[in-house]
Length: 246
Image (cartoon, rainbow, N blue to C red; front, side):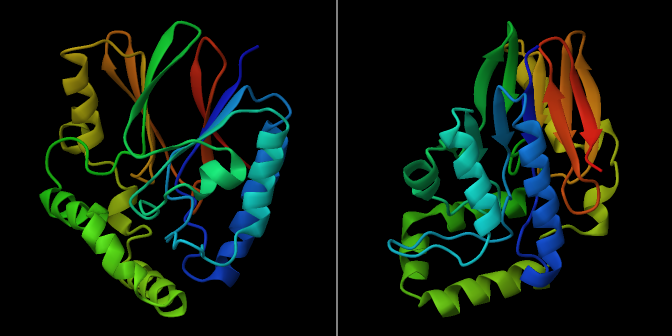
């Protein structure tokens, strides 16, 4: 039986490496469990609460997660990574060191004749104009060039502080259902269906597990997170199910 696994929003490193460590251990245990029957694993962004690739340096830590992903790839299981709003400054480290392709925007995949649109989800749909403007600044090559001139000890520490200080990891509003009319990714999915059929829209970013019908034969799924829910998705070739890892 086909088994495709999906997970998102681990935010390792937040609020501190010490407090994040038990969640990292739990996620590594999940990876070890699903590798037994996985045909592919999709990681949909914000694996780290902050990530920036200098030319010769990457952020310290996360050895167990990175090692497990390398082990899974070396065994022949495909792993796909989508950047989120916290690790959008990812470049080619995963591709060169782990042989894991990195995507910066939603991508289409077909499994067992079901068409998926998969991505992190930030900046999609109507609204959230403030974040969309901010993202344009963050992904601008000049902005990345400027940040690269900061010594890693200063740059990474500053970025980690701002990420937690501004509660970008997850606030109370991120775990409340806003209603279909106010869920931007639901609206985004419905608009995509006006021009093309998709069986499944799979996203992260919202930190809230959701399964919502957006068309007669189309479903929007949000994977939740590995902060409070520890949820993941699995497609068995016929149906898609959200599960909690205990």
